[in-house]
Amino acid sequence: MLASIPQKKRDLIARGMDVIDLGAGDADLPAPPRAVEALVDAARDPAMSRYGFGLGLPAYREAAAAWMERRFGQRFDPLSELVPLIGSKEGIAHLALAYLEPGDVAIIPDPGYLAYLGGTLLSNANPYLYAITPRTDFLVDVDEIPDDVRARAKLLYLNYPNNPTAAVAPRDYLKKVVDWCATHDILLVYDNAYSEMTFDGYVAPSIFEIDGAREVALEFHSLSKTYNMTGWRLGWAAGAANFTAPLGNVKSFLDTGQFMAAQRAGVAALESHADWLPGNLAIFRERRDAAVAAFRAEGFRVEAPKASMYLWVPLPAGVASLEFQERLMQEEGVVVLAGKALGDGGEGFFRVSFITSPARLADAAKRAGRVLKQVTR
Ligand SMILES: Cc1ncc(COP(=O)(O)O)c(C=O)c1O
Image (spheres, helix red, strand yellow):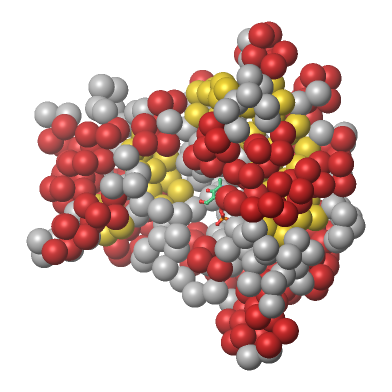
């Protein structure tokens, strides 16, 4: 479903359609200038052209550890408690190979980032999909996990701020989940890719700010969204050494590390955080506000998200999200993601990404409003 979108988009452009792509979470904005300069300089250094191996550039590990400490007050040993990743997707998907045996269960939020499901299936393990809907504020209610699933579960994936629903998780909820994982010996895989994309004074926590999390959790971070560096493929996993080591072992058979010049640029991005991030977030906030106002004006019942780069837009009852996505694309040239494309639990919604200007977002909302009128006539 998702894979066919780029080709369809090319066909529409070839037909002369003015396409507005709000599909992928992949902003049109530049990376921090210091990261770009660091990449250029590092590319001239022959030492940066060599294999990074699992260790990678020690300075990248140290910068990630320093960032975790500044941001969350949590100290990690750069060598044993951090794993540099070729983008967080890589680590999230490979983690499953380190932890899941055939017959094991992984509990996965539905809709959710597809690497959770992908890693589980590649490990010949069984996904248990939990539908995250407004009923539970888009949270996985661990009390609703059936006993037989819980007994076989090895991993629980959670992602707040959430893609695609833009939900955030209260700390008392996170405490309950950490305790539940400790009781049932389940590894909590906490995907914090959107920790910095927050608005209106909301500050997203690290799972490690929750008491007891070091004993049960691994947390994944990414430079992709925070620093507009999706294509640079930089992330890391943090956690106790007994959890990071199996991931490092699996990776030692699969990759030889990210380009070290990119890692050096990652250091520059992480170090430019305090001066650079507020300006970038202001751009996203302006886009969010424009999108919320424009979609509301067209009759969509959206709430302003406190975090992430997405609007999770409900459709009227009975309107299938895939049909809406297809019509919006073919008739109006607007690319969004149908909720169902991200999992059955996403039916009844579509996702808009803030990856273009406020004016284009407003134009897209107008076009979506025309399709809404057609499908509800
Ligand atoms: C929830 C979530 N986790 C992880 C990722 C992966 O990011 P990356 O592999 O670019 O670090 C994404 C990207 O869209 C995401 O939405």
